[in-house]
Length: 303
Image (cartoon, rainbow, N blue to C red):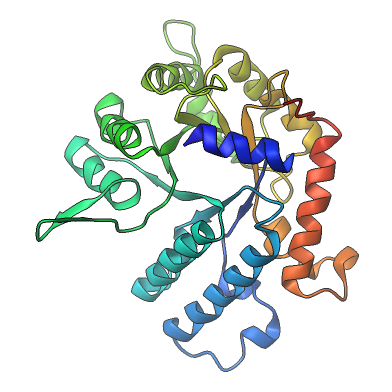
């Protein structure tokens, strides 16, 4: 699956991902009137997502759908999450389910079936939330990751493992030094390389990727040098303080090796003065084009 995403990035000359972290309060005022329950709220959220997807699907290769923004609306929110995932895939976009799942082996297997694989029922194999990629937490170790790796091999999917996250306090644990002299995040990166070694595609990257925040360029540069076969999902651009100049270290000499997520900067772009007068969907498209141009100043895709 990572090869398919890379091919879209090359074709569009755009290593960006739109984060559909769609809080009801992000919607325009007129979409939030006369709403009194979760069902009505999530219908509006779904409509909002669909219109943005329609506006950007020809210029942006992927969306990342953060499940927490849907879970807070109960089962109606999960219906909106599922519809958004399916709608984006139907429009030809690669879909990353941002769920950060993990547990002990048997439970991790259930999570893997939910987002990457199939669930057997009545003699049929059915898909629950058919994402292309899933974010996972690797800090339980190999037995908590193996079910996901098994799924990506059998289903042509990919995962992104948390390695160096974009939040300010990530260093409290991830930057601790081990007895070996490695930092914790470096050790996690080495495990990611090992987990993905049997899934390396034609561009040299495996289907076991890493989440590496744009807000920590020193660590990101270190990881890029160490993890030759690991593709990065890069959060932190825009609202969290990461810039194109900071995150250029995440890419290889071909301009490949990562995809940059932007959530509020895209879906809330209509609130910014520079996009005044545009609909929220038009503003989202304009913001995507501006982001593409910004990244292109520092990242040159040469294939």
